[in-house]
Image (cartoon, rainbow, N blue to C red; front, side):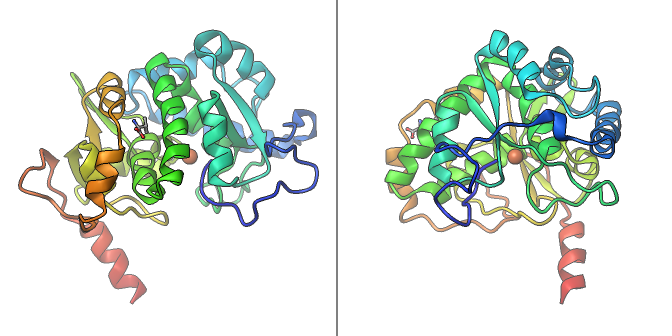
Length: 290
Ligand code: PHE
Ligand code: FE
């Protein structure tokens, strides 16, 4: 999980790099049952919706046996596949700490699980979002390289004071990315695959725009953290995503200093449009809060 933490020293009990032990033994039966419910819901929904890399990662890592998986068990398989590992953290960690972990192929994950009475409500990413959502993709070598490069790029973007631009890339790829495949659009973003409602909305709803991924365009597009996205960006493949991000971002950041943000639901003349959304969902929601 990323985003700024409230403080920049680790809380009591955490190591200098903010990691803690998962303490798997401490989970109770009710917590394991929440994982199992969520796991069963998503794993029956996602075939035909999630991309192959996600589904094969999910298979390879055996994330269902016995409730909340042990990070140690995940790591022995994940390490063999791509050299990535999952490390437990107490909650949101400072951006630099997060990037430093990614740059070293460690994915920081929350260890707590959401309340069983509110399965769809999340104030902060929990172990289901972080592990079910993010970890299967880390078993893909190309995506694993992308995430590591993102960590290095994050350290650089904070030095260059362009984290707000780079964060949009993370949001619209790692969290909410879609991919074009021969059988149609597929999900690879962790924020979508870990949410039942958004796994349907992102692919099937008439409301959001679905536009071809364009790096600089994405960096100019704000995003919603509190509701379904109004735009999704579609990559042609993981290889294409990695290739697009291997270029030097410094000249892009310089151009963005004088380029205004786009509106969240904009469709530009040069966008390749998969779906021109009605934005009906977003309009109904904003009418409701007024
Ligand atoms: N190429 C980027 C840079 O020069 C680093 C990066 C790679 C960022 C991959 C995100 C993803 O800053
Ligand atoms: Fe996430």
